[in-house]
Image (cartoon, rainbow, N blue to C red; front, top):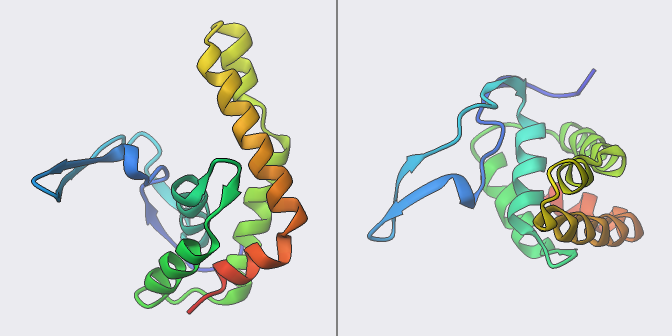
Amino acid sequence: MPAGPYGWTHGDFQYRNLLRQSGRVVAVLDWDRLGVRPYGEEVARTAQVQFGVGGVFDLDRIAAFCAGYRSVIDLSEGDLADAVKRLWWKRLTDFWQLEFYLDRQDPTFGVMFLTDEALLNWWTDRADEVQAAYAAR
């Protein structure tokens, strides 16, 4: 059972799902994953998508993002550590990109798989540093 407080979350909150106009966010798109889940899960996934670029995490940005989030929603280090470990495991065992690549014959997903695999290797080698960034206040 995931740790921490639960509530309604977007489920896929990331830059690709924000509509901007004149430098301001005017809409949040893609609500198909809306659901009640641990807030830590939303934070972990959002930070991974936003700041896991080019096969590495931007740990300073993760720390700033998590500190900002935790200034509004009370998430303990344990809650976030649980969410980050669960996300790492999910990424380790999830091959959805290969399914899209092979079943739909879309080469985009092959590239995405390789990028995510590089991030997973980097993340595994620096698990303590990643956990520390997520624990930032």
